[in-house]
Image 1 (cartoon, rainbow, N blue to C red):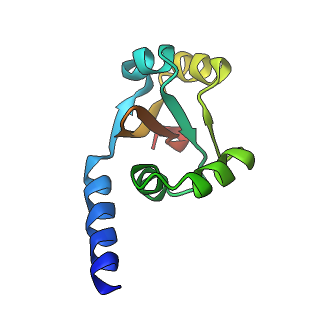
Image 2: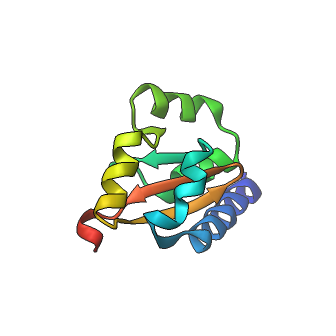
Length: 105
């Protein structure tokens, strides 16, 4: 069990290092391809990315049902583009998980 826990910690640390702030405009092609997923602020982006990377379908389905993760909507994409929003993003192939940075902090 300790090995699994250590592996999980290392994998989460790896995911954390792969996150970055990026202007939404730079992710438009992923949105257009239907690959951009919004992670709402009540969730930890790194945890969500980790669960995606572990193919934890049960957890991902729970978040989808609760609308805590959703495909980026046309309205969100338009609003983010209009306001020159910056998002936290991480790639978990084939997806780009994004979380809006409040007030572009």
